[in-house]
Image 1: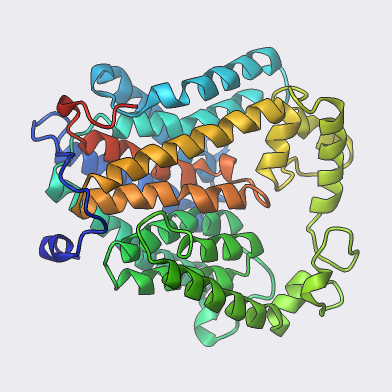
Image 2: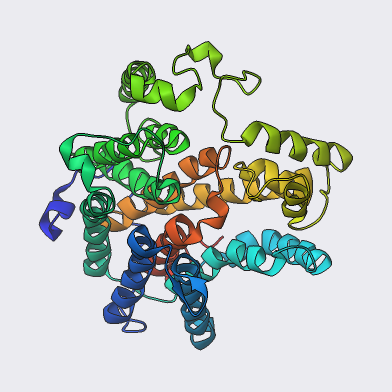
Amino acid sequence: MTENEINNIIPANTWQGEYGHYTDEHQGSPGLNRFILMLIAAAMIPWLFGGYKIFGFNITGWAWVLPSIIAGLICLKNLRYITFPLKLWLLWIILLTTYYFFGRGNLDATQSFFQMLAPLLVGCAASTFRPDNSQMENIFRWITRLAIIAWILLLIRWPVVLSGHLPGHGFMAAEMIGLLLLGACYASFYACGSHRHLYYYLSMVAITLVALVRGPMIAMLSCLPFTLAPLGLRKRIAMIAVFLICGIVIFYTPRVQEMMFFSGSGKISDVQMSNPDFRTSGRSAMWDLMFKGIEESPCFGNGWNTHREVLLSSGFTLYLPHNDWLKLWHDIGAIGIGLYALTMLLQIFFLVRIARWSDGAHQMLAYGAATAFIPYMLIMLTDNVVLYVQFFGNLHFALIGIVYGAVNWDEGYANV
């Protein structure tokens, strides 16, 4: 989309004009371009080379460690230019730090702690830049291009798809979870008036169907009807109806039936954890263990990263329970997950407020960043998105930081 196309889009609401953009030269376009391209590369390179190692560590791990280090250096150099709403996230940071301090001896405690904080660090670094309208439009275009890049990488990784032979099992789950951010952005761009982004959004729905990953499929479908960008109620209801019908049809296809049930067939009513024929990928047994720990300490949890030792000591070769809400509840209690949920909801509120007082690419990116929390919170029910910071969290919070960095804070607006 060109600059003229963005400017010609009918405004999504009537409140624009309150927020301006910075016009100074601090942390200008070249630096922001390099920073965003680094995050994109970190999210995409593991698609092809994630299993390879450098100095004994997987590239997938380097993909979140190196951006975090660079983001940290940027923050140290530009502390007074950080506009990311750290005050909003402060209680969450304090809670995580406290739990980590008392549980730092637990299995992989340090790694998990920094993975949780990495998106916040990246968001702070991104907020030190001062993008003007032209730079915001450039970021907008890069996000659009990522749909094409994702399909190219998928076909390189699984070329048999070109022959029409789709995999009979789920694959590339972490990568598909990362694409939920794109789905949220494209849905919001469409709601703001960029009609061609409906096709980009549908391409993201299609790619999750090809990869046959159940959680991301459902979460991706939620992005459009529940986008936080202005979209008429009738459209939302119609979309929900269409998606439900399409979902039912897809559910009864042989490929999905074999993925869902050991017997190869079943009804929607059979999709329940207590059904022995339902393929839970070990989730049922792991969740039972998590619930036992929750019953022992529901409010304050059992300590940072204690879920890993519980699962390993019970015979599981993996220590990821595929439910981030349940995992965090087990470790940091209801108070912890309540604070996390509340903080995300408040962040959504302030992003939407910025979007309503903005226009053009700034508005569209703000709505996209706000909407991304919806599939994020949904996928937390079935997967481990809080640890996939290289695929989702880092780029998501970079967008939040950019949205805040572009606001004219000299006017004092939107100050959390």
